[in-house]
Amino acid sequence: MAPQRFHEQFDHLQRSLPDVPLAMGPDESAEFIYEKGVVLARDGEEARVVEDAVRSHFTATEGLVPDHVRRAGPETNRSGITRIRVGDPEEGGRVGDHTVAGALRALRETEGRAGRRMVSRNHLVSIAVNACPGDEPVPAPPTAPPNPGAVPAVEGADAVGVLVVDTGLTHDYRSYPLLARTEGDAQVRETDEDGILQQYVGHGTFIAGLVAAVAPNTDVTVRGTLNDAGAILESEFGERLFDAVQDGWPDIISLSAGTSNGRVDGLLGVAAFMEELQAQGTLLVAAAGNNGSASHFWPAAYASLPEYADAVLSVGALRGDGAFGACFSNHGPWVKVYAPGERLTSALTGFDTPVPYVYQHSTYETCRYGSTYSCTCRSPRHTGVLSEAQAVAPGKPDQVMFEGLASWSGTSFATPLVAGLVAAHMTARGLTDPREAARRLLAAGSEFAEVRGTRVPALLPPTWQPAGVGPA
Image 1: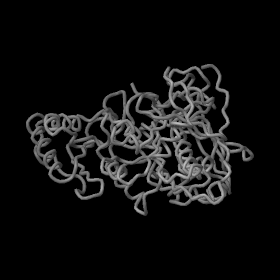
Image 2: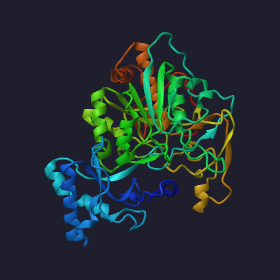
Image 3: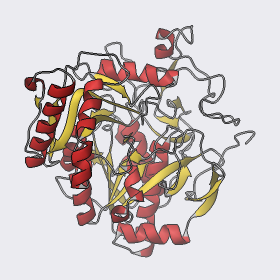
Image 4: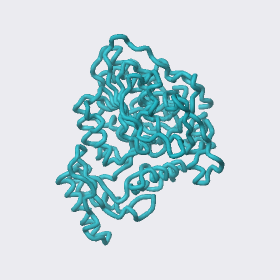
């Protein structure tokens, strides 16, 4: 059964994307969220094969007329993906979609003969990671230092290009000195009609601040690919990734978004982008996700595929002491490195004028992943408006004021630390190949931590300050 927070966030995302009917899948465990009534296939002949197979299956087994199966999107785009309508998206509830499941079954035999996947759900890719954030940001005092602290720049060193694909930059980000060299897209809408900061606003700004803190010799560019509620359909994600690099491929991409899909062979919607990434020589540093799960999370899990082992670095999160994995962090052999990801401090918004924020989720009485340390599931305590709506945490939602800096937790934030450390290693060693820099850094500069009883490589920024977290 999916946790309450997942249902809360599902409702929030459905309101934020009113024109996209969504379902949880593959069952009540809610491993991922996807678009109802639609499947994805590769353009051209393969899309036609899928369409014919699904139409034949439904006509024979479901009693539907052939016209129920039809193209639902353009055939020509850089991601090479076509959306195919297979049913009425208004039918059924939030748990599963039998027409989509039927379409997937219809292609199993054909896929077996072809030796590769030909059809997929249209998954929702989210910065919240499976719709459940590690936690929500907490205001930091205006006098608080960033954590990690700022590393001195190397005079005369060439700049490393880092592209952050996330939400856009908040309007006052240049008030934060570490972001003086940062460029990019503005956050489309920061507050609601009441002036309340919207959920996930500042996510991209926070990440850019972390990169700049550990790697000052970087040119950071932020693309607001995920400005719409921090979520995007897989069918659009590949195309938007191509948009993000249209002005040139950077040395490093920091990506704190993704989705599970119940498979170990990647996302159909980003396959074309990943092939181009491999050819370009860029290093993708990607968040492993906040589900406390060993299930593959994409695009980070491309690091486990041999053809992308050098091109992708998947990042899990350590808790506040840096010795153990954070309770929320995904884990498993496909996660290649871990970095601090709990209660980091960086730029958010409110530098010019304080901005109010109302919490969306309530904290739990106990850790939702079963850990016993003082984790972000439980602390700092607050009541959220979505939980109040679900009648699980009665009481007035808590409101705070942001005045520039915030503390925030998630693999979303461990990821830019690793991206920054790779960039800093390029600067320090005079390297121009980010993939070589990542290999050398992991070989010579990594320490070790314990995650679920396994010893794993860990990267700890030199200016990061650990915090006590109580019992293990």
